[in-house]
Image 1 (cartoon, rainbow, N blue to C red):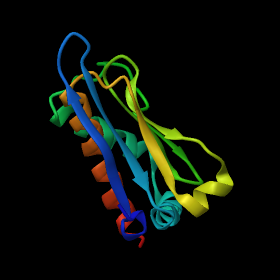
Image 2 (image 1 turned 120 degrees about the vertical axis):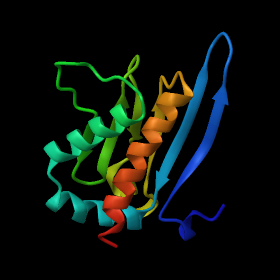
Image 3 (image 1 turned 90 degrees about the vertical axis):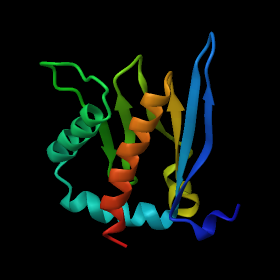
Image 4 (image 1 turned 180 degrees about the horizontal axis):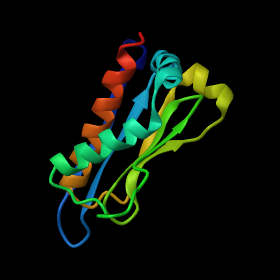
Amino acid sequence: MNQELHFWTVEDWVNRVGDQNYNAFSIWASPKFMKAAKEAMVEMDEGKAQVRARVIIRESGRRDFPGEFHHWLKFRPEVGLAHIAVPGNACGLDLYFESEALYEQNGFTLLPHNIDTPGQQSTLFAIWLWWAKCVEAYV
């Protein structure tokens, strides 16, 4: 696939159910997406972003941790959203770090960690879609 044609893309969507559930996907974001994300970060209210992630988690039927504020999202100024978590055993998408110099040339990838259920997988993707929509306003 020619990634130059895409603003971002989902790669390797996998669902396996059995003794060892395995659900995964990764997201590649282009340098153009990164540039727009940097602009979005200037106006982003991180507290409101955390609340939005919590709303998406609740609307998906997932439980968050009642009475405890959890940072479902982590941001880095050079790429924007660098980590997404959902309830589970360290379940999330994490920035694959090559080098900051390569980010601007190649874009970046978010890789899966401990995605045990399709529900976790779809909730992570819903949060990514919300973020992508926020960033697309800056293109």
